[in-house]
Amino acid sequence: MSVLIQGAPFIVEQQQAILLAETSGAGLVTFTGYLRDFSEQGAVEALELEHYPGMTERVLEELGDTSANRFGLRGWRIVHRYGRIAAQDPIVWVGVLADHRNEAFAGCQFIMDTLKTKAPFWKREFMSDGRVVWVQSKAEDTEREKSWQECAYE
Amino acid sequence: MLTVRFFSLIREALDCEQLEVAHHSELRTVDDLKRSLANTGGEQWREALYQPNVVHALNQRVVNTDHVLQNGDEVAFFPPMTGG
Image (cartoon, rainbow over all chains, first blue to last red):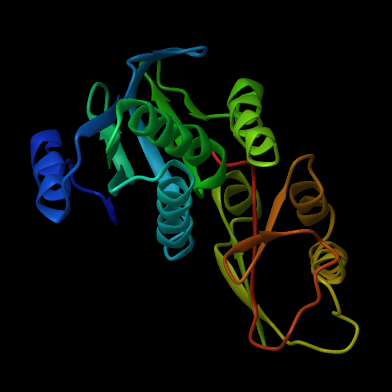
């Protein structure tokens, strides 16, 4: 049940070991997001991630707790980087533990889908041709997040 | 006093990360503060703060602009978030 926000790169295996040391469960689902080396704008060399210190940690802690309550998770960990990130470096890692696979898959996906639009991060892409472009939020991400909200009110 | 913070392309457009604003009776809501900043700052501030989809946070929680301000509050303006 923990959040790590850091500028430095992280090692996926270490993050998984930290989660497994905190708690146990029969089903472990993890997601690692890497920086794509292309976008709608063209070839991407690097990314700069700005965030809102304090709010970021609180939003992610509440998100992990919400997922744990909703899907009966035994444990969760969210790792997110900020600052300059090179193409193909990991940006985000989410790991959840549950007694059964369905809960683990759903809990992890809920965290990722909600994090995209609710955690205060903003991306700026450094393109290979020298342009610097702020990444716009995607309607598809908003729709995915909303689909979980509708489920919550069923 | 109110602490006002700007992030991402709003920070960039205003060339301002943070400022302190005296809290007074005419700054009742987030919307009042936004209007006051636009009136004082001029066209550049009006454009940045009133662009579509601006997100407003009060004490690090996303709120509607009719939320009432208290002395000591932290208000932030930023574009839609793009995490993950």
